[in-house]
Amino acid sequence: MTAPSEGTPEGTPGEAHDAAHDAAHEYAAGRAPRIPGPRPAGDDLEPPEPVPAPPPPHRVLKSLLGAWALAACSAEETQAVEDHLTECAPCAEEALRLRDAVGLLHPEETLDLKPLLRSRVLEDCLGRRPARIPVPVWAGPYDTETARLDALLRDFGEAEWDTPVRLKWFQEERRRTRRTTVSGVIGHLLTVDGLVATALGLDDPLGPHAPPGGPAGRTEHFWSSDARPGTGAVRDPWREQGHTLVRTVSFAGRGAAELAVDYGPFALPLADAFLERAFECWVHASDIAEAVDYPYGPPSGPHLHRMIDLAARLLPTALAGRRRSGLAAPPRGLVAAGAPGRTLHLEIEGAGGGSWDIALDSPAAKPSREHTVAEVALDGVEFCQLAAGHISPEDAAVGQTGDREAIRDVLFAAASLSRL
Amino acid sequence: MAKDVPPRWDRRMQQRLARGEAAALGELYDRFASLVHGLAHRVLGDEKAADRITREVFGYIWENPDAYDPKQGSMRSWVARIAQGQAVARLRQVEFGRGSHEELEQKVRSANAAARADYIVTSMPAPLRAALELAYFKRRDYRQAAADLQISEDEARRRLRLGLQLLSTANVLPREDPAPRGYGTT
Image 1 (spheres, helix red, strand yellow):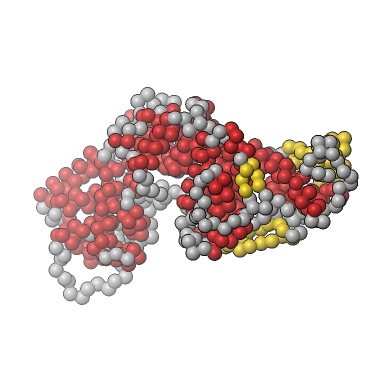
Image 2 (spheres, one colour):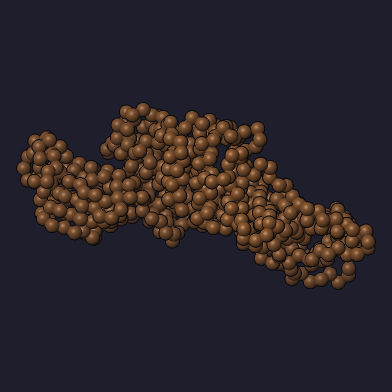
């Protein structure tokens, strides 16, 4: 892209000097230097002064050279500067130099880096020289998803940070929504990621007096707190915490994957918590993207697969919890721990897909092909939307055969995995 | 966006890269990818080519973190220098034989100046950049710019002049050692 109204600058030191030399030479010979005027001033609406004032002193004219080169002074000032240039060689030289510099200004390109480029570049690098301290495989999706969301936020101005966003989840058998802003969503991610941070012994972003409890309580506390950073200011702490988490687990030993992260009502091993945070990051990035009308794709196939796998592994426990609350049908018989029990076969299609056998009677039961009572097939992204509470179990586009009650229970259990 | 990074960050990053920490590589990418990609795109005018330069530049840094000398300047300027050198080397390959030697050199000169100018704009103090943006892109005169920025008219004139003076060095100062030795022939 070139400057809107001026020619491409030649941009070589020699030529700049020659031009300055010519200007000086022409000045010595009593001729006007051939400096074309700048583009018309944006503001030429001021009425001309009735009586010509004496020209401003050299000091003032010199200070106007930048504004002159940018056509950002009044018509009188432009005239005064140009008159001055015919009689002052140093100013004429500088005027030329600054005019050439204007030609180098470009609108900053809002060229989006393709999200996939990051993974490719990193893979490429690690292929050339393997890492001595790798990022654990289970932290990969979190690393990628946080970088992807951060890239989306990069060019956000105040208006975007204040854009309303509707958070959606499924609770007490129906869809819930909560209004916040883009900056509120990042605050939510910051505070819930903070559960992982504290499990690793890092500082809690809510400070030492954070309220006990899970994601919802922490988020509400953050939203209502006076210390809540204003528009956009939440991005850096969120990003920095994300980098710190990835760095910290890279140095932690193998056992770290099993470290418990306390979510209040339940706990997850660290490796699963990282996956859960990656999943939430993607889900909320999509919420933000939708609010500002920007496209945002799903995670890469392998990462999506890990997220789906986590949800599938959580299903038997969620199902048992719902059964205890009377929200799901009772078991059809007692199954000894580790013994095969009734099973639902989950077939996930598309990138990141695969198949999972879900134990229906108890989290301790062993899923079994022979005891399969129902089969469910749905698209990977659709399944994640369901688990995120973005679509209700009744509306999920599901291919199903077999025991309808079992299918309904599993779909509702999937939706119940979501929360604020 | 220029960010003021303390030199400590630069030295720490270099150590982390040197000891082979993959998480540091990710952070390096997050901080500098748009700078590298933007410069490569400015020189080559092609997104695929800019992607490729980005891969090469980070690959080089990851393999040669010790090539950075904090005494010579910030890591940001070092990364920019590698990116520009690599992109210009690529431009020479692509353009070789497409015109006279003089035309090629002219293209290289303008590409270098454009890349340097981009780097200068993104690295200059934010108040200067803000004044230039108002005057150039928003076509505000210096009085309006002064009002927008809540500064005196004298100060607005000073910022515009200083900003352009900084920018004009892109035309004058050729960058030394455009590419690290043994690099730029991929």
